[in-house]
Amino acid sequence: MDLEEKRFRDAENLLNQSGYTLAEFLRDSSRYKSTLLMLPDDELRAYQKLYADIATGGLSKGEKGKKLEELSTILFQKSAGSLLDVYRNCRTSTNEIDLLIRWTERARLSGIQAAFPCFGDSFLCECKNYDGPVNVTYVGKFSSLMSAANTNFGIMISWEGITGRNKWSDSQGLIKKIALREKRYIIVLDKDDLEKIYKKEESVFSVIYDKSQSNF
Image 1 (cartoon, rainbow, N blue to C red):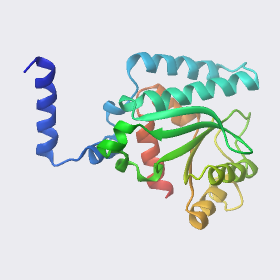
Image 2: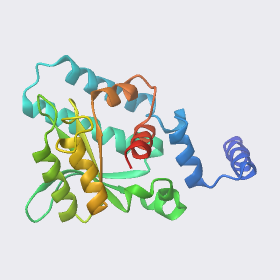
Image 3: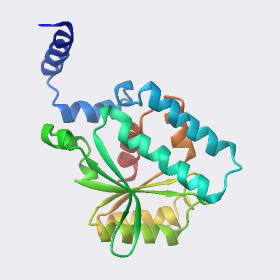
């Protein structure tokens, strides 16, 4: 047995002794903000560069949107050992989707996807480069896009977040209504959430875990 296999067997034995399944380990790694799910150093530097470019300002709307898409692609494609496949700029019969995200075949075969049942087989991610918070009109459009793509989970990445706090008439209220009436779930990541990842305080999985627990 070589050194690499010994390391693997030692880790495997520890996991088995703890009673964890792989899915449970991923779920609790998100819950307790494990560094195992954070971006590797090279990818983190690329992410930090994109984040800093956006935060500095001075970008055109198109440039900001492109950098948000690149940043989001790194987040989902490179975190946690590449458990997710990311497809950019996919089209339905009527609309374009920024990111369509699916579990990799390896993740599905291992049962890891059970850690995040809300993801389903696939989910959508849309990047909004508005100067202000996203309003109810766009939230409604995103919900319709999710329906057209036959997905029940979506992530909006909006630098300035969405309108409202707890009012049922604003964007946050509409997201709650959609969850209650249509069983379709939307999570919003804003610049503060992205900054936590920038600072290596959290992974995208831990941010999503916290929001899914508090929102749904």
